[in-house]
Length: 136
Image (cartoon, rainbow, N blue to C red; front, side, top):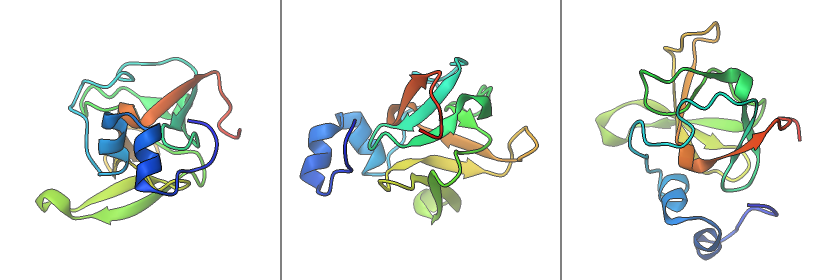
């Protein structure tokens, strides 16, 4: 998507696929190991499918073998917001796009790198820009 952030539910439905809408706007989740970015290791930038904001650099992506969703150990500075999520009888930390407020996934404190973070992000809410710059 290019341009501004939709301001109404009607506009969101016009610019997103049904699956993107279900996850970004209704806080859904795609099934484990079904996302198109599982195992992708190309260099580039992962952007928000809702507003095109740069979210994660490919350098922060790691093997998601155990999680089932694209996994990152850090986000582009200022790109995401973290919120408490007590849905489904669990206490988790939700990750949302700082620009459009879209639900991206969850972050956990059991990551395998020095950050200790594991951002589990739904593929369907990401667009990949090959060789892209996370600052642009």
